Image (cartoon, rainbow, N blue to C red; front, side, top):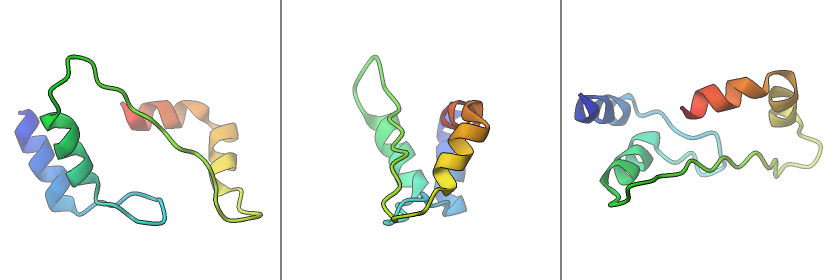
Length: 71
C-alpha cells in the first residue's frame, strides 16, 4: 500500500545527499499529500564544492542510474 511505503521511508531515516541532509520520508510525505493530478521530480546535480566531481562522475558513467533512482 502507498501509505505503508511512505511509513517505511520515514522510519528508515534515509536522508538526502545534499548539504542539508533533509529526511527523504518527509519529502515523500509532502509529495504524496500535494493536491495535484501531475507531479514532477526535479533533480539538482549541481556540485557546490570546488573540484568535487563525484556527482558528475556518476552522471557521466551511468546516467540511467539517476533516472531509475528517481522513479
